[in-house]
Length: 307
Image (tube, rainbow, N blue to C red; front, side):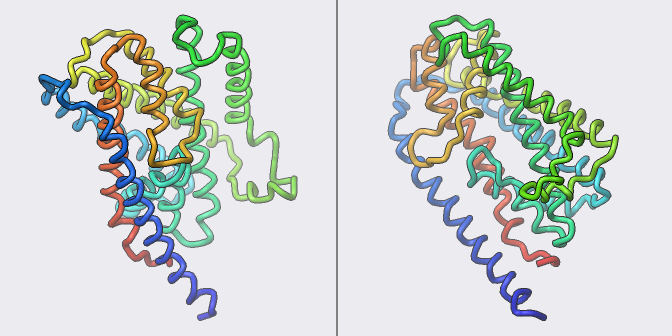
């Protein structure tokens, strides 16, 4: 066994402990958010709706898991137990990176070195498809949103749509560009080119839309948990919140999450009680992100046979 082979497991172990330390630090810093909430403003909490939101959380992540599952099947690497463990590990690694972009790191460590480049590329492709889906739905809503509720003048909507159109063209026409011919992009040689890629991308899109509906429904229900009267147009505002919070990466933890900040700007126009907005967004983050991330810790720390 070479020195490099002996050193690699130690490096992975250190990276795992660093990841857990970052996770704990993130949670600790969120106490600054909680201090800003006036819990006395809530006279009655709808625990029935809160239970429903908790029930929807596994469904939310199940659609994300389906993208990982079809990816593994597409590459002929699928084994049920391994796919679930690697997926949960990826939830944790994604949580401690901006916009969950690092979810591939926790996943690929379950697989041999020779498989990791392909798995990384297809995982990033799935994340890119969710990114485009969220932005596209939000962009459509922006066209029908009143001027005073937008963060930027409406003329920028056309610029956003042009970039999104280019983004979808890149998504579906990536194979024709053959980027591996460029030396700096030679990593894309691991991308498996086939007609089946288009079907895989369509399945990603379907699961993205289904997942988007679930976590948007969760957000609207969470507003009602804290006595915000239900209105169907809350879905439109939630779409705009996800649009801006997705577009703006959250590099800095410890202050308000990007989503909480955007929610205060967008929803304050229709919900005067800022405590409802802040608490709803924060609690939903705990349910949809923190709880799954905690669940993924044991799977990241588990020793893999390929390390």
